[in-house]
Image 1: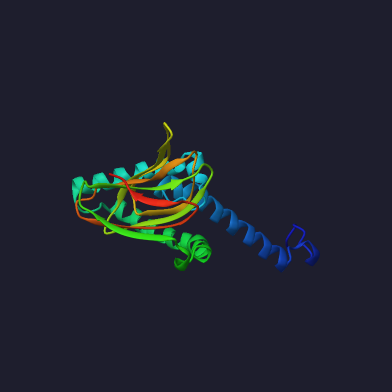
Image 2: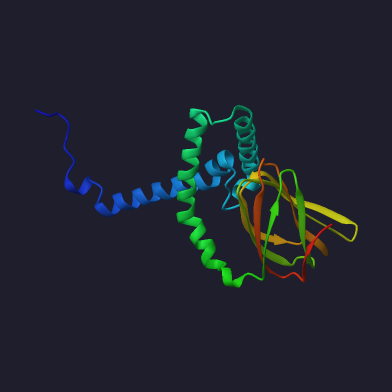
Length: 213
């Protein structure tokens, strides 16, 4: 015989309430994954929040240290292999929520310029956009065959600015707003031991795409 009072039907949560609670929990988990876990652990920052909070730079450092350790010791350790597997799974989750949306907003046919170039080990290259102050450009660059370090910066009219930088990156997409009249763009360097290929796609309010000497 039970001494506790059994709940009646009215006190139990409805199916609608259970579904709502499940959806809220799922959305919260995805938000934490995208804004905190991915930037801090894997340098994947689809929302830009991780960069603002300084978590993306932490993730970039971890990725670079992982690369250097792997280069020193050869094959990945079991822990490293586990991180690789987790990284692939997380990339898949992110693609479900961000990449398809981004592709829908910036279809390939809408790009104003698309360039592809190869970098040998230790080689660097710089491309910049000529832009007016407050002009915006949208970009999508990716690395094939390895990873690259980059520095996104601008200069002109005796002014200079560094927007952001990254190490051991396989690509990035987003927008660039010019802080002043001048040239704004990227310097890439190949720190891998084999040649890599970078593809850069651009569109927006700029008058010139220039390879800097």
